[in-house]
Amino acid sequence: MESQQAPKMSIILISPDLEKLHAGSLVGSVAAAAGMTVSVFVTMGALKGFRKVNVEAKNFDHDELGQAMLEKNLPLFYNLLEDGKEVGDLQVYACAMAMDLMGWEKTEMLDILDDVIGITAFLNMSQGSQVIVM
Image 1 (tube, rainbow, N blue to C red):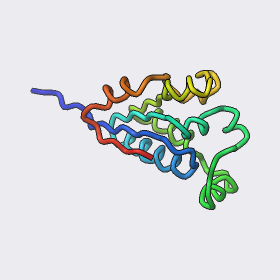
Image 2: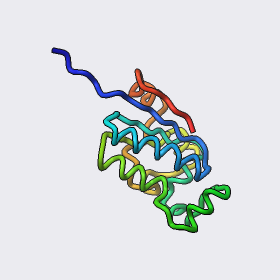
Image 3: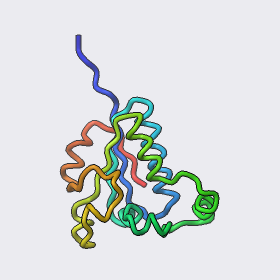
Image 4: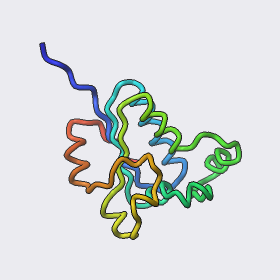
Protein backbone atom coordinates (compact mmCIF):
# COMPACT_ATOMS: atom_id res chain seq x y z
CA MET A 1 0.00 0.00 0.00
CA GLU A 2 1.49 3.34 -1.09
CA SER A 3 1.52 6.21 1.31
CA GLN A 4 0.09 9.32 -0.30
CA GLN A 5 2.02 12.55 0.08
CA ALA A 6 0.10 15.58 1.37
CA PRO A 7 -0.75 18.13 -1.33
CA LYS A 8 1.78 20.95 -1.50
CA MET A 9 1.37 24.69 -1.88
CA SER A 10 4.14 27.21 -2.49
CA ILE A 11 3.49 30.89 -1.93
CA ILE A 12 5.88 33.55 -3.18
CA LEU A 13 5.43 36.90 -1.46
CA ILE A 14 6.92 39.73 -3.54
CA SER A 15 4.83 42.81 -2.80
CA PRO A 16 5.43 45.07 0.21
CA ASP A 17 1.68 45.84 0.36
CA LEU A 18 0.16 44.85 3.70
CA GLU A 19 -2.99 43.61 1.96
CA LYS A 20 -1.02 41.23 -0.28
CA LEU A 21 1.16 40.01 2.59
CA HIS A 22 -2.02 39.36 4.55
CA ALA A 23 -3.85 37.60 1.70
CA GLY A 24 -0.90 35.32 0.91
CA SER A 25 -0.43 34.49 4.59
CA LEU A 26 -4.13 33.77 5.03
CA VAL A 27 -4.11 31.37 2.08
CA GLY A 28 -1.00 29.66 3.46
CA SER A 29 -2.36 29.37 6.98
CA VAL A 30 -5.69 27.93 5.83
CA ALA A 31 -3.92 25.51 3.47
CA ALA A 32 -1.68 24.30 6.33
CA ALA A 33 -4.73 23.87 8.58
CA ALA A 34 -6.35 21.82 5.79
CA GLY A 35 -3.43 19.40 5.78
CA MET A 36 -1.33 20.77 2.93
CA THR A 37 2.43 21.17 3.13
CA VAL A 38 3.03 24.90 2.68
CA SER A 39 6.26 26.70 1.80
CA VAL A 40 6.31 30.51 1.79
CA PHE A 41 9.15 32.32 0.02
CA VAL A 42 9.52 36.00 0.97
CA THR A 43 11.45 38.09 -1.54
CA MET A 44 11.93 41.57 -2.96
CA GLY A 45 9.71 44.26 -1.40
CA ALA A 46 7.84 41.77 0.77
CA LEU A 47 10.96 41.26 2.90
CA LYS A 48 10.70 44.71 4.47
CA GLY A 49 7.38 43.71 6.05
CA PHE A 50 9.21 40.91 7.87
CA ARG A 51 11.83 43.20 9.45
CA LYS A 52 11.33 43.46 13.21
CA VAL A 53 11.85 47.24 13.14
CA ASN A 54 9.02 47.70 10.61
CA VAL A 55 6.66 45.36 12.46
CA GLU A 56 7.29 47.12 15.78
CA ALA A 57 6.61 50.51 14.16
CA LYS A 58 3.66 49.12 12.12
CA ASN A 59 5.49 50.61 9.13
CA PHE A 60 3.80 48.87 6.19
CA ASP A 61 2.83 49.94 2.68
CA HIS A 62 -0.96 49.83 2.57
CA ASP A 63 -4.20 51.15 1.10
CA GLU A 64 -7.50 51.87 2.85
CA LEU A 65 -8.10 48.23 3.77
CA GLY A 66 -4.65 47.92 5.32
CA GLN A 67 -5.18 51.16 7.24
CA ALA A 68 -8.45 49.77 8.61
CA MET A 69 -6.68 46.54 9.62
CA LEU A 70 -4.08 48.55 11.53
CA GLU A 71 -6.64 50.85 13.16
CA LYS A 72 -8.74 47.89 14.34
CA ASN A 73 -5.67 46.02 15.59
CA LEU A 74 -6.53 42.92 13.57
CA PRO A 75 -4.10 40.01 13.64
CA LEU A 76 -1.66 40.71 10.80
CA PHE A 77 0.07 38.49 8.25
CA TYR A 78 2.79 37.33 10.62
CA ASN A 79 0.15 36.24 13.16
CA LEU A 80 -1.55 34.20 10.43
CA LEU A 81 1.75 32.53 9.54
CA GLU A 82 2.38 31.72 13.22
CA ASP A 83 -1.11 30.18 13.41
CA GLY A 84 -0.40 28.12 10.28
CA LYS A 85 2.83 26.82 11.82
CA GLU A 86 0.98 25.82 15.00
CA VAL A 87 -1.77 23.86 13.26
CA GLY A 88 -0.01 22.45 10.22
CA ASP A 89 3.11 22.04 8.11
CA LEU A 90 4.08 25.59 7.13
CA GLN A 91 7.61 26.85 6.56
CA VAL A 92 8.68 30.44 5.81
CA TYR A 93 11.88 31.27 3.93
CA ALA A 94 13.60 34.56 3.17
CA CYS A 95 15.29 35.11 -0.20
CA ALA A 96 19.07 34.97 0.21
CA MET A 97 19.74 37.25 -2.78
CA ALA A 98 17.42 40.02 -1.57
CA MET A 99 18.72 39.74 2.00
CA ASP A 100 22.30 40.05 0.74
CA LEU A 101 21.38 42.95 -1.54
CA MET A 102 19.87 44.89 1.37
CA GLY A 103 22.58 43.88 3.85
CA TRP A 104 19.98 42.43 6.23
CA GLU A 105 20.69 39.60 8.66
CA LYS A 106 18.23 36.89 9.71
CA THR A 107 18.37 38.28 13.27
CA GLU A 108 16.75 41.51 12.00
CA MET A 109 13.78 39.57 10.69
CA LEU A 110 10.73 38.10 12.41
CA ASP A 111 11.38 34.81 14.18
CA ILE A 112 8.79 33.06 11.98
CA LEU A 113 11.43 32.80 9.24
CA ASP A 114 12.74 29.25 9.21
CA ASP A 115 15.76 29.92 7.02
CA VAL A 116 17.34 32.15 4.39
CA ILE A 117 17.61 30.23 1.11
CA GLY A 118 18.13 30.83 -2.59
CA ILE A 119 15.45 30.60 -5.23
CA THR A 120 16.96 27.38 -6.61
CA ALA A 121 16.51 25.64 -3.25
CA PHE A 122 12.96 26.97 -3.00
CA LEU A 123 12.07 25.81 -6.51
CA ASN A 124 13.47 22.35 -5.76
CA MET A 125 11.33 22.02 -2.63
CA SER A 126 8.31 23.38 -4.52
CA GLN A 127 8.30 20.72 -7.23
CA GLY A 128 4.83 19.28 -7.68
CA SER A 129 3.14 22.04 -5.68
CA GLN A 130 0.50 24.59 -6.51
CA VAL A 131 2.25 27.98 -6.74
CA ILE A 132 0.71 31.33 -5.80
CA VAL A 133 2.51 34.66 -6.26
CA MET A 134 1.44 37.77 -4.36
